[in-house]
Image (tube, rainbow, N blue to C red; front, side):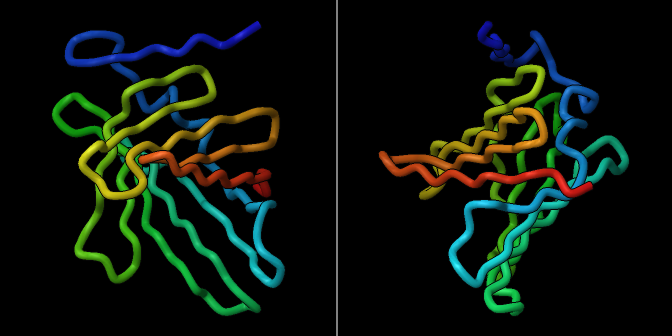
Length: 142
């Protein structure tokens, strides 16, 4: 049976933080290059989810990102801020289901779309846009 998601907009089917709390926890990426480890950690904090993403190569941090799922003016956004950038990039939540969500920012160079889908203890995060697609597979550690 397919899970049907809900698109939403101003005034209809507004998601709540409760619908996103399944993302909370620490996730280890399984599809990394040899010598690398990567993880995402998410926690509930004051009406939002805050997260961090980190990639290490041979034990040294080579990538860090601050993440958040936040509500602003009645709309939900995925916020991503790479260390050293000029600030966060916001992706508007455009679709949500029991264990997945999709966020989009067509004005961003790449990615334009970010999606997360939970299946058992496995999390699939996908970034895509302009014909490119990168998938990140995680398993829950805690």
